[in-house]
Amino acid sequence: MPAATLVTVLTSAGAPPRIEVDPAGLDPAAPLHLCSAAKALTAVGVLRLAGRGVLDLDTDVRQWVPVPGRWGPTLRQLLTHRGGVSDPPGSFETGPVPPIAELVAGRTPAHPGPITPSVEPGTAVAYSDAGYCLVERAVEVATGEPFAAVMHRELAVPLRLTRTGFWAGEHSPVAAGAALGNAGRGPRRHYPGLAASGLWSPATEIAVWLADLGRSLAGQDGVLLTAGQAAQWVADPGECGVAAGVFPFGAPGRPCVMTQGWGVGFQCQLRWYPAAGGAVAVVLDADPGVPQSESVVGRTMLRRVTELGWR
Image (cartoon, rainbow, N blue to C red; front, side):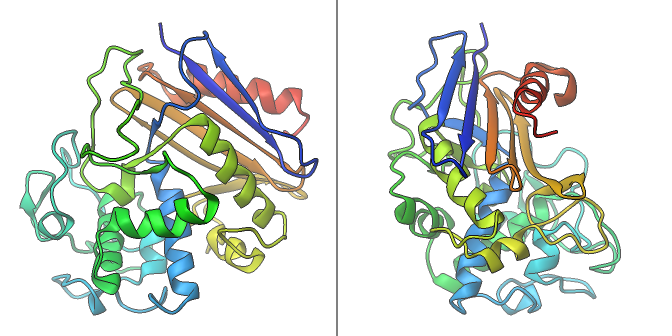
């Protein structure tokens, strides 16, 4: 039977996180696949690198990655899905995770042909895993290190997380005890492009980074982001409801910042409510096969934020 893990964090009260598993049986310390919610933490890691001058958010990505065609999007445009890049049908299916340099060059089944903008960057919003692959490669070239290693240093180390990471199936601390997905039947699946969909994290550690980023969103400097960096993270040019790996929405004075993911074996949604001083995550170890708003993930999220009076 699928197990839904619910994490509630009240950052303003300083209370310990509340972690519930329904039905009981899923280990709160088992890393869970957060799928496309990876984009949110990829953006956080890139903002940290940019804050130290390792990357420039507004520089043409071709400074680091060969991109054929007339246009070179910036990292900021790629992070906010405004880079002019779209995902071809049939791309980014589960399977072995290829080297990102091979993927962006179009030499793997994950993406037919090199990744390149199909429309002028900055003129439209198109949700894209391929755009995050360009970001991933830029991080590797700028640092000279594998993407997962960079994100470990930028995200896990500062918060003392030991089982959170971008994981492609290799031997690593994340691998030990990671949930199988598909209601415990497995097998575990991985998607090409770690930056786009390769994040795994257990409930106990989701609570830690939810709380830290929630403080930054509420206007305090956190461990990972300053308040100013958090404002960049959720900046939504044109107010389209799409920011850097997250989706801001909500009534005036009651903002919400949301990220979500689903894939073979898992589904999740995470929300921050800065004005209320809290955050909620719901992760399911199954793909329920219905839109998230209709699944146990969406229903559980709606129930909890309604109980808390955050809607």
